[in-house]
Amino acid sequence: MVLVRSLGVLALQVQRAAAAAARAVSRTAVQAKPLRQQRWASTVGEAALCSKTDMVVLRLPQSDEMRFPFVWLRDNCQCSDCFHPDSQSRTIDLQTFDINSKPSEVKVVNDFVHINWLDGHISNFSIKWLQEHCFQRDAQHLWLKSMYRLPRKTWTAQTFENILPRFQFCDVLRSDVSLYNWLVNLATFGVSIIENAPSDTTTIRNLAERVAFIRRTHYGEEFSVRAKPGTTNVAYLSANLQLHTDLPYYNYKPGVNLLHCLVQTESDGGSNLLTDTLAVAEWIKKVDAKSYQALTQTIVDWNDIGQENGNHFHSIHRAPVICENRSGEIERINFSQPQRDSHFNIPIEDVKPWYQAMDRFIAAVYSNDFCVTYKMKEGEILTFDNIRLLHGRKKYEDTGNSIRHVVGGYLDWDEIWSRIRVLKKANNSGAS
Ligand SMILES: [Zn+2]
Image (cartoon, rainbow, N blue to C red):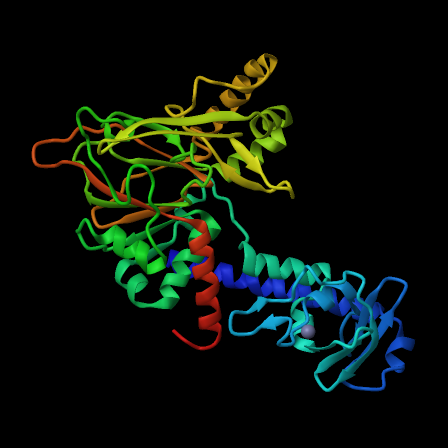
């Protein structure tokens, strides 16, 4: 029921966003100058050249005016000299491209905008294609939220149980709709559970390859998390594992963790801790701007030195705990106490303020407000966003025949996003 409800919510959000965009468009359409509409000779629309702005202006009935820069239209000409349709790739040669190209004429013919260029070149754009690629902010925003990155929904300890989506392993493997729903939920909430997975060490690989391919790191591809004596990684101890992201010392950090529980400990421990650090970061930003600034601006050295199967490694990546993109959105969280380098290559006066901010961060990520405890059951695969969540584990004691055994693997977000887009297109065109 949780799954149905959360998917319903998601579908509703998409519908609302589309309706809001439609309302925005119709609002502006209502405000458009009526004189312009009366001049329309065609029911399809009309196009004009604006030499002042070097743009083609396209007016369609019931729609806002769209503008397209000459240079962009010439660069995106869809003719076979400029564009290779089979590879869906631009082939126009930039070495001979004139960024000051100008049309001599533009007209709407049926569902196409026809452009004659001064140099004799001819372009034809379908109106549908122009609408899909237009520069209106609402349309761009809608495209980015539906095709580039899906909107994320944060959760706290209080809301976690209500949002935690659950999927059946066999459904995800057999049905493209289930696969799509799992990935969309993972993108939205940063966490989901797959149930009834076969008790087999190859299960993680099968799941990863259903999406794309397993991400290899210096620890290999699949990894077994079992208490190991003489280990080179603290994850292989049965002690408490502090909240962290995996592999912050990779520039290209693995995007999603897949943890398959084959055997759970019978002792009280062994639970996983999870914190939606996106929610924490948003909260810190509101209540303590100074700490937020230190966490987003101070560059920390993350490192990992060791060996796996005789292969020695020394990885370093330098990045703040909270990384923002150019739009100020949180893009990536880095944190791992064992894998933070003692080299701290920042001005000495910034050291103590960073520790003060980190103290605030730690108090929040472990707090009952944000941190949840989840003990995986045998046959469950806990899947979560390693770019967004912190995870940890409570200490446990293996007893007799019960040796906690978890097999893990990683997927990359680039592959997941790609898979989501391909599945969305297939689902929209009626495939299942
Ligand atoms: Zn062309």
